[in-house]
Image 1 (cartoon, protein in one colour):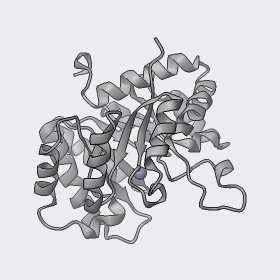
Image 2 (tube, protein in one colour; image 1 turned 135 degrees about the vertical axis):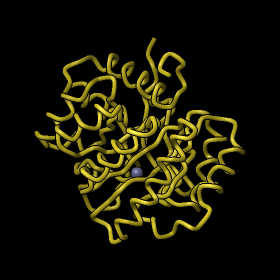
Image 3 (tube, protein in one colour; image 1 turned 180 degrees about the vertical axis):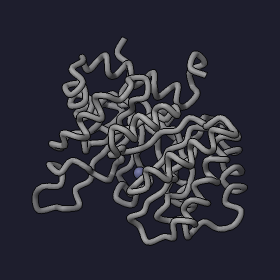
Length: 268
Ligand SMILES: [Zn+2]
């Protein structure tokens, strides 16, 4: 049986999808995408993300505050996140959260906010979706220190572009590594890291609408966005790099995604 495609990280609530999100989701479903991890990036997104998830059973809502918006985190956010989660009758995740040294927000503030997300996810064993830019050592240190005292929740490192050594360190901690359309670029180092990733920790994502394939950005419209139906192309590209059948990769990633989100008892 052909399993559905998974988009392990995207933002359907993004203003660029406004007024057309149902068409975007419809195209994804028609293309065979059957599981989408839709990530909030700030507290004002939470209600839209949960509304989308209530309307489409393929969507798992991830609630959190992105490091770029760390300074918008108002006191009591964890409490409000839990209150929102309790209104839902479905699996939820925590995110998008993480660390980003390329943004202007104070790194201590980012680390405190990320620790808050990590604690929340660990307390419920909810999946956690993590963004990391130029902060790999700090991220791995925070995760390994945490794991000395308490089991980590299921962790997904989204749009991974770190080194092979960092991929190894993170997978040894049990983290899933999600690759985006950057795989379609001629980046030999990223290709090597991708092909060496343990198959049981592999995931794929569009990070829509944030297109990462430069081919998609060519042409007069620099604002070109990607969307979850683009997963099909990404799976084909990834299967070629791994030298496996696309069907085999589809099954592998479906299994990984359902274990990551605790939907498969065999994986718990
Ligand atoms: Zn994202």
